[in-house]
Length: 270
Image (tube, rainbow, N blue to C red):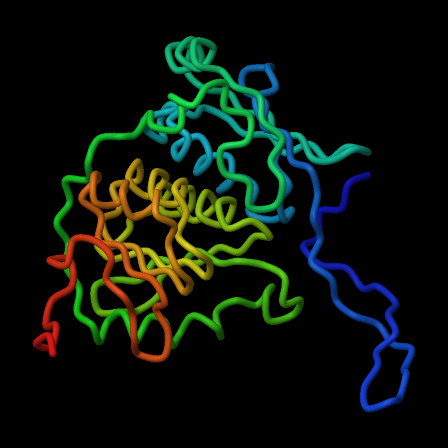
């Protein structure tokens, strides 16, 4: 049966200063998770086996399979010998739309557009974000300083990413972790969509990729702060979708790549 705990203990040999010690280590669990819509398999993602209800909802929204949370009727998590199945029941209208643009993909860790049927699908983008939230430099720094202590799974294993939501004052109000950065964001979007969420901004403990931007836009998020750098396509699409994109957000510093107006109280340029 597939593991459902996010960590497991494994025996290891630890070498330090010419000494070798037999000990154990806590390892992040990675399992295949199949997303099955109305009885039809759509995707298999390698993921951490926790918060899978959030994952199902967030993936469905982030991939444009549904437009609103109310179009997802039921989710059932079924562990099996080969992995975990998520049986998802969506509205007949959205299922018909899914069958028209259906793709099968096997998601490796951090997989983005694996399995797209054509190059054109990469540029099948959502509408530009209409929200015009702005936050201060101090709020960005405050949120980033909180982030490490709010990642229990990564603190135990050192092997997972996090996606977090901070309010406009920089207080982190929701966070999800996963071995894949896109999965972490899907889980966060699912959690945010299922609750009342204050205005704020997205934090990612990873680089900012094309798909991070697209998923955020579908969730009407207009500010993204990533710990690492963005890709060129991520910058282009963020500009196109009216998203303020920050990279290298750490140690009270960040780089603004697009939509400077999303950050207020900026110091004068030297």
